[in-house]
Length: 228
Ligand SMILES: Nc1nc2c(c(=O)[nH]1)N[C@H]1C(S)=C(S)[C@@H](COP(=O)(O)O)O[C@H]1N2
Ligand SMILES: [Mo]
Image (cartoon, rainbow, N blue to C red):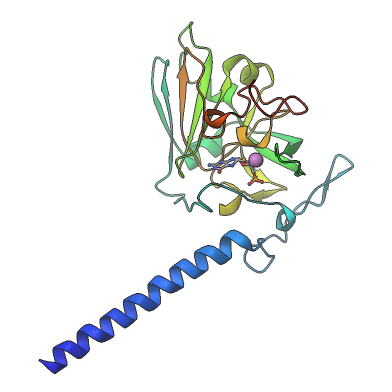
């Protein structure tokens, strides 16, 4: 009997220890910047086209639920909604498409930002794989942390907006949004969805996480932060 009790006590102590460990590490990861030791950032580009890049270790992360960890081997990007043929694309399939590389600045609506070199696949390329219904007007991006946002189809197509899988020449680290971050050029940071798991084509405007509490759904950098 007392042996059993001891065993139970020991189990509880062990479980509590690991629970505390998990929560503590979770917190530390959210607050501390990524260091060169944690990641192989030795290949990180420092400049591109004569422009200086913000080191990944100095880029901020203020995501609603902290870093999401997505398994490369089981990951699938879903493309659904007003499309003739819904698609499920693996990480390797995404990498196999022709890529684009651009220097783009990310500006959070709160006034901070960073300059980076992005490489990824354009939505034009992905949407070429299926037929988009004629009345489609908006595209919703859903993320692993429950976050969502949307942009107009016309903006995405005309600006050849990309889903990035590389940042400053390295694979997007988990805290930067692995496997994909939307590089929503000239739009405030809350349009730059990270950890994207699905994309839905629709025929009406949609308000995402921040937009539904009053942030501008247009989100042009330099424009008003709030909807009037
Ligand atoms: N999935 C997800 N994506 C997100 C967010 C988030 O909380 N969850 N925050 C957005 C906001 S408000 C900003 S400013 C940028 C920050 O991008 P960064 O982490 O690359 O700096 O991510 C955007 N994308
Ligand atoms: Mo933001």
